[in-house]
Image (tube, rainbow, N blue to C red):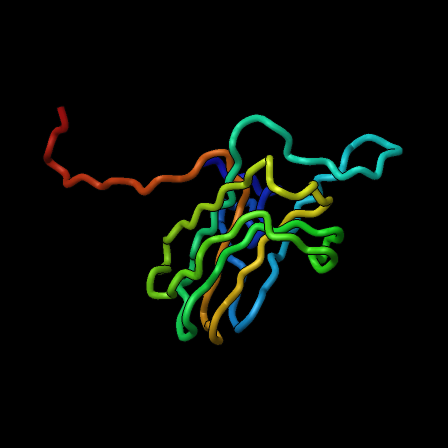
Length: 162
């Protein structure tokens, strides 16, 4: 996975290469700190752009600080008519409710972004976290990626693989 700071939905990426998560504490719905504007680059059109056909895209939610208290979290990829993600919101894709016990720090939750979603594209895309119970100490970085990052397999030193 290659991380592009312009494709971050939640969190920030510093020039020094430090990824900082967005605090998504509390109960209920929490919106991503960033949105992606997919409006056309041409002048004169008000038709929202779309991600088009081509290669698969994903949103990867990286748990940087494990959630405590609360019950579960649902991760959503959403689109809306405004950058604040409040007008005419539609859910493009979402996970099931994931128990917080299954979300330790370092967990990556991938979510497919289907270019043929059942809705017409809207101008702004973001993420939403639906927390059940008042979750404390929870931070997440979310980014649009081309490939899903796989878990690395660690091998003990001193052994050769043939």
